[in-house]
Structure formats: C-alpha cells, structure tokens
Length: 336
Image (cartoon, rainbow, N blue to C red; front, side, top):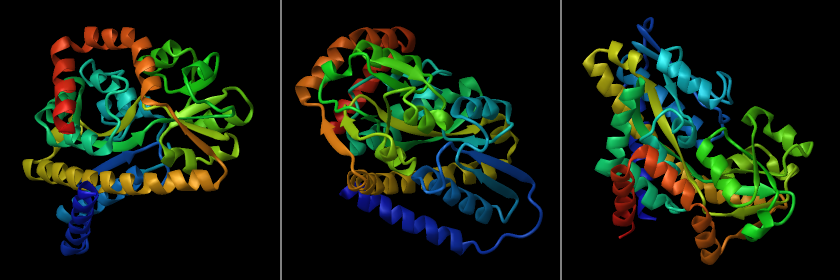
C-alpha cells in the first residue's frame, strides 16, 4: 500500500512537470525512437509516453521522442541489437531476453526468488545492487535507465494445472531464453520458443498447449479466448529494463543526458505504480472472462526449485558466485 501511494505521488509530480514546461517549439536536434512489443494500453507503453512528454518539455523540443508500441519495430531481441547499433535509441525488453546479452543480468533469471512487487522494487531500483546491474550494461553498448516492472509470469493452459506432475509433456510457449527453456524442461514440460507476434495463433491452432506471461498480457492479448486456466507458479518475476543506446547517450550534451536519466526514473516510478494497480484489475478481468486461477502451494514451489538446482548452478557458473550471492542477500534484506 505504501509503495503504491509513493508511486502515485511521483506520478502526479511527473504530470505536473510535463505541464510546467509548456509547449515545445522548433525542429528537434535529436530523435529518440522508443520501442516496446507491448500494446498502447500496457503500463510500459504508457510510461514511455510519459517519458517522451518529460524529455520533450525539458529540452524545449530539442529532443523528439517517438514511441513505437505493439512490436512495430520488431521483437525484443532485434530491439536490443538495434539499440546497440543506435538504430533505435530506447527499448524495453524482458529481463530474460536481455540476459542473453549479459552474463551479469542473468542473475535475475534465478527461479522462485522474487515473488513480491515491493521486494522487487527495493532490490532493483533502490539498492546499490540494482544500480550495479544497470551500470554493467555499458559493457554491451547500452545505458540502463531503470528496471521496469512487468509482474509475475503466470502459466495459462487449456487443461487445469495444479502441480508439477500436471506439467508433464505440456507444450509451453516460452521466449527464446535458455534459462526459461531449462526451467520448464526441468519441471517436465516441453518448452517451445515462439515469437510473441505468432503466439495467439499458435495457442488457437494447438501448436502449443500453453504460455506464460503476466496478467496484463494475458488479458490485453485476449488469451482468455483460447486458454481456460491460469496457474500462478511463482517461477519468474519479469522485469522490463528500460535501456538506451550508449552511442546515442554519449552523443548528448551532459545536461540532456541528465534530463534523459531523470525522465527515465520518473517514468519508471509511474510504471511500477500502474503495473501494481492494473495487474490486480487484469487478474479480475481474466476471471470475469471465464478463466480459472490456480496456485502452486509452497510445497510445490519448493519441489520445483529443487528440480531446478542445476539451472541455479548454471547461472552461478556464468554470472559468478559473488554476484549471485549479492543478489540473494539483497532480496533477503528487502524482505525484512
């Protein structure tokens, strides 16, 4: 409750900032193309529009921000690659996809660790650890503006899933993220990477039996039309890092760099607020649309983590024991 109140206050301040700086004028000296695969109604797209208003207002139109939602500039991996090349300037990929590019970011793929929004926000946006991860993105040609919120990834399916045994042989669509593929395979399912733009049709035609995404995407993508059940497994809390091309960022004068960073922070706080608020609403809308929601018990989650110890070991091997231990410690501290 306190987190949501804090986010609401910051959202109101952000809106006031936009109007305080008045209308922009003149031709833009810089253009930011900001991409997300999510639709306009999604919190991440709405936060990008707020980011655009703040940046344009505070630079008096010297920077123009164009928002491309709904995957208009391609899927998440191509967006990251385009940002590295400065073909687009801002992207909001899933943390799991970004982890394919960064050994350090892979720590956020540790399963069954983050299960609460308040804890996730503290760890990724208020701790030194979160800033350390953002700073590490400069090693791969990116600037980390903030860790955005997408919410817990929940499983949808045509048949009812209540425990790990029910997953055996189930064809589950995942992103092309090795850690996610390994997670579901370890739990007995048959993970199948499919581009998000092709997912609805794949579910409709039975190419896959299910998929996993937060309530927001389940409802806005109308998966309730082709899936009857939702299972809260508790496996991955999905983050949406807000990243910028380092080439573009380095081309900006210092005062504009600061404006971009500040705008990213304000838009991100707004994002966490509306994601938390709307995820509850999207959950209810999924139920009203006829979906049944089940939950893995704590015992079932513990069993799922046990079979995924090889995945945890693999992430430790790649990211390093020190970084993994720092992450786990930051999570435990945030829970206090």
